[in-house]
Image 1 (cartoon, rainbow, N blue to C red):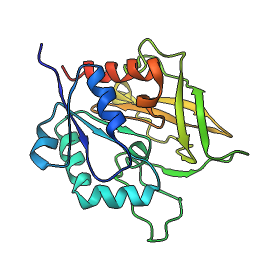
Image 2 (cartoon, rainbow, N blue to C red; image 1 turned 120 degrees about the vertical axis):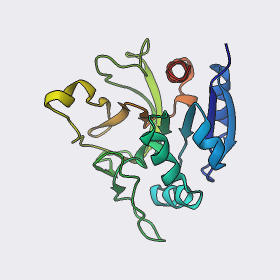
Image 3 (cartoon, rainbow, N blue to C red; image 1 turned 90 degrees about the vertical axis):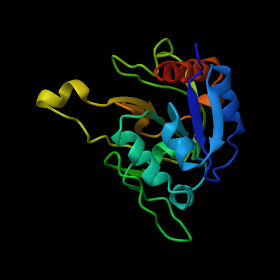
Length: 215
């Protein structure tokens, strides 16, 4: 069976080599690039993110990542955002920025706000509360994952009703000072606040679950 083609979006966000290696270990053929054709043609797009929200969004927009992500999702092409790569999918962030605020990609409503905890950043292993029917967390619902962040989405408002209820996003939660969104599965768009590539066997299984959906 041919390995799924995964592009790790290269827009200047931190050390992405660990993500490339983690995806390769679960059977993906991985390319680190921002080339438009490669991004659009890949079976899956992995959007990393570390550091300041607004700096990451400036980097994403500099390589036309906001448009490429939107085009992929419009065609139901899978995208997985990680850490700030997840935060980027929301409307914006209250995180300070010397160079000024940059809007998020607005794939989901909501803002990213500082966690009201005694110790910030939230750094270490935390258990998550995965929903029924999860695909990402299949086999690892009761495991711990590795987080490094000071900001998070603390309120989820996209909750379809009526005939759209069957396609309502599956939201996973964790807690540090308050409950916050740890992951979202929403059709072709999935994201995690934690780093699966740094989460040992549990993270490896989560990435394997995602890659398996690309076959």
